[in-house]
Image (cartoon, rainbow over all chains, first blue to last red; front, side):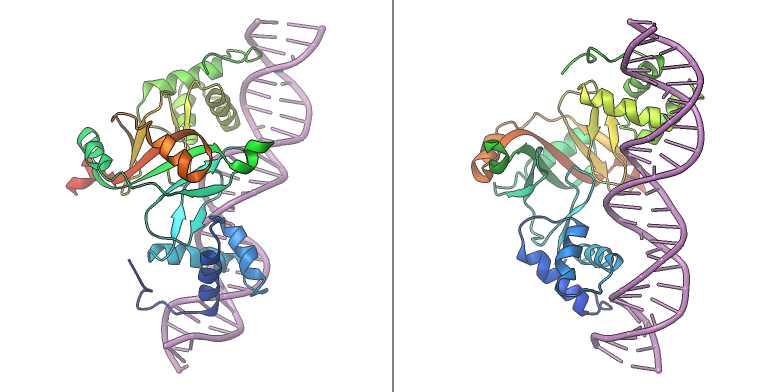
Length: 132
Length: 132
DNA sequence: CTCAGTGCAAACGATTTGCAGGGCC
DNA sequence: GGCCCTGCAAATCGTTTGCACTGAG
């Protein structure tokens, strides 16, 4: 789960993408990462960003989020934690409550699946959107 | 949350889509619904299916699922319940465990959001895929 | 040197939308 | 008769991919 695969090279693009992603807590989409990275590497291609985000998430170095909405989002923190999305502005934030690992065995019992993981996705209204 | 909007007409297409969706427990994608409905209404358009699924889910009559994967899925059962997806074959099943409503207040406290709802998404391996 | 990685642009798949005709209320 | 709804096709949007070139090891 940690470190690059043996054949993976540590390119400048890869490194900058990872650095930029770790700088923020905003769970950016691929094209938001593209914009962030382009400030440092103006000639990078969007395809490269997609390829590297995919690769880094396959290695478990970052996490791909499948929170609602059209675009996938990426999280520089690979440790499991929950998320909340603002139904008004679409912002995604971390929810730092303890993990409910015990629900997995209950889910396994009723579903008949081997349960590998779970994720809780909250929806709500963020403090910024509450005021208006 | 229940019933059609005042200006919504109960067209045959709309009715057949709803009936077909309620017939199955497979959480079909839009194009799977399209295939099911086309057996009864061969001239229906894919756009009509998308429009009606969207409309029915806006009324709360069906539910749109944002479980991982590329395509959205639809559920004829609008009451809240959890889902599990097979990482091997992509099948989505219901998980009938009790709702953990109490996590919402904990999430509200740490995130600062007004929490409106939550959903738990499990990943695992279904009984069919275990055997192979 | 070699081969994984890159930039670019074209291709793709899911979903949305514009439009002109059709049919429910 | 009005207007929502439909079928159809083209458009859009996020993402992926083919290709020839580049650069890390």
